[in-house]
Image (cartoon, rainbow over all chains, first blue to last red; front, top):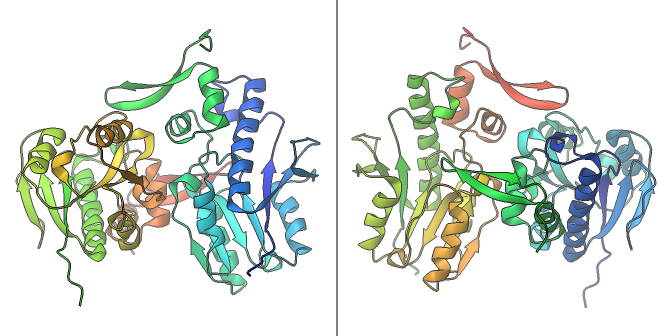
Length: 217
Length: 217
């Protein structure tokens, strides 16, 4: 028989006034609901991958059945506090990766390198799998994917870049909602449909439109 | 010993006035050069995957060592002409997928389903691998990924969606050039660098800037 300890998956989350780049189509409360719907999808995918979700929140917050740690610091400081005292592998998954599936996440967890990393759009980092978190340093914001490869190299750690559009697609901009409506099958898509969003094609290009006052049928 | 016929990989290409959404940063001749640089990277990745590149061009055009078929029709009509008379598997790879690698393409070619498909950003279709092209119909433009899944279903064909950001990222908009500078290691990145493009980070977000009159060192 083969037994393995499950890996904790840290999911950083900002419950208050999140996703401000969606402000043109979603009010503040709606953005908070949408962020929570995406979090639910991420938590479910993480559980399906065999890892144990742990939400790292900027504010006190509760999410059914999931451990929540509140650290009222910036993302890098919070994570580096966690990394320093951690003597087991750690998974780090961004809370807006609502296209994530258990299969995609398992591709990261099965890397033979010291570090598995998934770039986000625009040079960000969406996922890290650190076999020895004490030999790493979070450096988010800007071209963090490039910076994280440098950090890995400084620590003499090998890395694998996992090639997944599901894990590459962070949901920040209105145009990203197209991807949610097409590829998500969970709470995130359900939320958008319930608020009147749908796909429209104009001049061969696809975007989302929100139809006001549309009632759920 | 195991012998296998290589699969033809159709690469649709528009040599004249391509990539008009890059007009704000690249002149027409530059866009034609850049499209050709991306094509070279795609051709090399296709060759590395073991498939044989065949360029399907809207205009007479030559590319060293690669067969070129000219069909002066729209993309769907051109492809459907090819599909109808084809009694062997066919690979279809868009010419702007300059992040493609042999490994990523082989993931599509190794599908056990009747059809391998890779969605592009915004609901498009970037790659198709058709084991029986006569049982398919191209329906590009708009949300073609969704339409192609419907076509597969009409023909009773099974499909696999291959989860790759390298094959998902088609290069159309100025912001897509960030991905080229970060993830491409071939002619496409080289072209952008030679024209003075580089990454800049402002307020934590990464974009490209073009420095005019920058000379190659």
